[in-house]
Image (cartoon, rainbow, N blue to C red):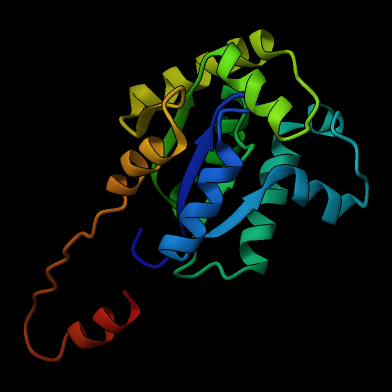
Length: 192
């Protein structure tokens, strides 16, 4: 997908560092951070942590796509936190925007329960049912792994080390644009 948005999904249980690393990606690489809980608050005007579980996958996929459109669809770069959370969410996403969006990769912040719980306590956040949430993510992680887009990070390591590993995923890439005179190489390069 040449001119559609580029997406990086960031997955992990609460306390794994999704928000921290999303912010670093935004600051370092110019991505727009879309947090599903923020989208729900903005679109529905409700601040309820349990609301996400009640929103059907196809509706949530549409809400995420609408947020992307508001923030600049063509050529946009998005790091999406909190979606998808299940294979059903991923299937809804693929039906809604699958062939119009380039998913660069999905970062899975794999973290043990004790690390996650200590981070949540340190941040003053309520502790979640880590085991249930981790188990629910596993089929999704397997689906991304099967598609070749999963990048697994050891989130038990210190934040600086995890960030160093994530930063390498965003290393520059080179695109060669070739063609006969007059076919629009310069225009294409300006749009890239």
